[in-house]
Length: 330
Ligand code: KG4
Ligand code: ZN
Image (cartoon, rainbow, N blue to C red; front, side):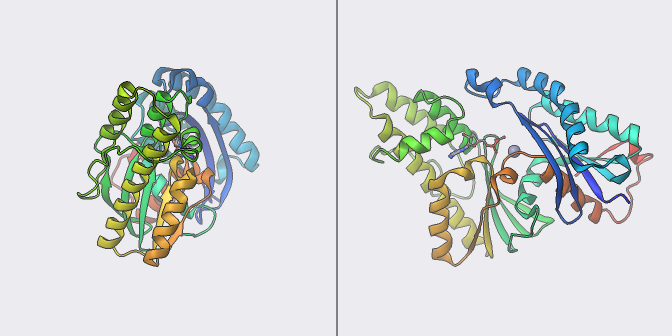
């Protein structure tokens, strides 16, 4: 019985593998994070990320199969992140998947990482009420999307420069709070006053984001201020981010009537963002869906789950000479 998809994720700084069934039940999921490797650099160091993936990917796959207690005979297909991401880390996952596909005579499907994130909220249990507006806020991405149903995805907006997580990380570094910056910036913000009028770029236009101006404004303020209160800087920065996210979500929900607002990505861990989103949803009568953080951050289960969408959609096999040796894109 080939009832499982093997997912592989290596687009940034997590080496992950997972086995997921057609209903999104996660039979096994392993993730090796590289935060400690990158911490001294204040951000992801691509060459070190690639090397760590090389070291970890086979053990992660082995552990996933051991945890599930299954062999390749149960696997229907291999889904692997094909991008967006860092090219070195992506190549490690893609080549491993291609090798396994050849060895086990299984099709290999290249999955768009963002599609995985957008489907992550329904892993393990159907949680999302459709149609849904989805906000993905992580270290690598900031996007708004509309999902009429699980496989009808329309991109509404994206960042023109930095992601929200990147902005948190850079401000965290400026304030000497280490990497990743999100959690300590949030904690410090709670002790300060949001008294500094940092800009809210593109607040009044459309559904795209721009965060580099906000980040530069924080940097300039810290250079110019005679005596800066770091707590007030953090509070004012977080306030600007909250206002940007709330206004864009409000606009997206007004333009695209939705039953739920889904928030995924590492930044969804922010208590301030969670509470602002809860207030917005209550006001608009929309359900707020915050999946468990282990599925909201990078993982391979979401890639395997998106692979099942491809398998279901691809009723008629594509005219490729030998799917076992081709990476099909989805
Ligand atoms: O999704 P994720 O774990 O990884 C990738 O982007 O690949 O997201 C990590 C990002 C980092 O930028 C981190 O600073 C941010 O999520 N983050 C937070 C919080 N926890 C993590 N940002 C704001 N508040 C938090 N509590
Ligand atoms: Zn991601």
